[in-house]
Image (cartoon, rainbow, N blue to C red; front, top):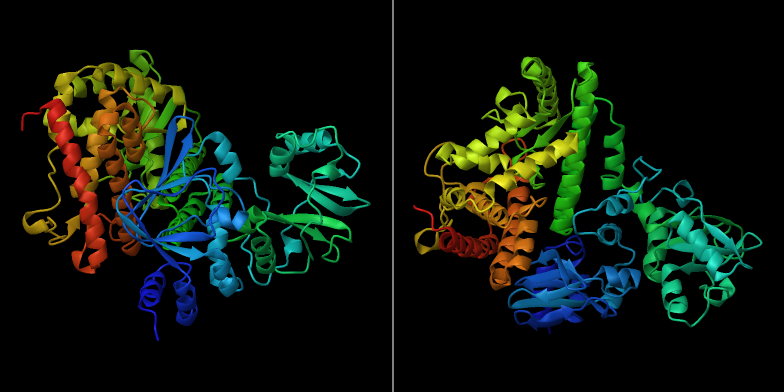
Length: 637
């Protein structure tokens, strides 16, 4: 007799990776062992620092908030909703939870036993590929320089590798080792010098054991052993080893089975033979195509615009894979923004060489709009400008002429890469947006102190700018000008608030979506204009009011506002979640219609009932944030 609950679970999980290409009878067996968990709003699923449970989770209904606590600071990571998998990585690498998971609203979650999952699918190639990607996607906050060095490591292998046929001898790297007579302090010093998290202990060229950061933490820092004792006291032995002749796929299974991050490669595959090298999870990820680390290195090495165009297409492929595999959208957004910015930087660098002229004075090329907010995923039209240092009046026009010439080359090259020309000519090649520092100061002050409808529109575009190339101090000076001029400028805020409220709730009577009534996109829903822009505009005005500098990303603006205004924390958190969910909708639509538009026009007939429910849920915070704007700034509508 069939188990109806198991049937319902199997029917649900088969729609999402890594279950979507697996045999239904196997999924049904797994579903029989799966628990259904009902969570009330703010109920905890798992807690940072606690040992992992025997299950990982997939969200059936509702939303689960993922965040990290650093002292009193809360760092938002992701909002997981229907079909998202969570709590998997700690089980793979055998570590405590590094994040918190709490129900954002009433939710239903399926708890899938990892042991049963491994038994049934450990030799399935699709599952293995999925687990590799999940293993690699561990950073979901905006990258610091340290994060960049860790995530976009200087991998040696940049060619595509066949996962199932390539031998690990082609991929392994040199293992860092110490002698079996060494002290713990000596081993730790070698680890520190080489910036590594593990070290092999050698005895007559054979791996006698391995020491990891965890060993130092749990065995030395706790006082169980002292740093002057022999490494044998704390090393793990025997090591997990493999033959150089096995495939990458086989090595991956060894790591997953033993819940380790690297495997020791020896001559005959046992710890009793000579150590040849090591293979890490990161090496495997870097060997696969469409990897961020590889793309970053290839972009940095690019010498021509056609090569950058090819790499921008690869970035689209990477984005598609991340979306299809339900990789954290925050992580996806961060990775794509970093790579997108690097492509733009390289385009400017190549353009300067192409022009074959040395810039006469200090300058900076900066991005505006979605790229300025680091929210551009699918390529859109260009929005950019140039600022150059102040020069004597008699040299101003000749200097400007040089930078317009340079900007024309840059804009042409960006167009060749895949970024369309801006229809409104909001580009650095337009003399209006190629100005000296003093001219930009005059321009910004005119927009701010004479807030006409046109000036407000332009300020909304130009206030979200981000440095791309050149002298960053010039862009920082522009930021200072904006914040000095808007500080306590109530009249300007009132006009900005009026502009931010020009797009009301995206729903009309009977909760129907408001669609375009005529034109090329008749009966289509403009998700950018009707849903994303109200959230973007509101975040901008509120951060300006608080004089917050250096935060352009919309979701990050809302997270910072939540800290500053705890009385409105729930609204700001909801806005951040809604914004990312809406941007994900737009991105998926843009990838499906690549070449037509950037995804902002959605055909409602293509949406499932579930998609429409999700969209409507995202519209609720728009009304709430617009009420905040109305009460605070009292614009004259």
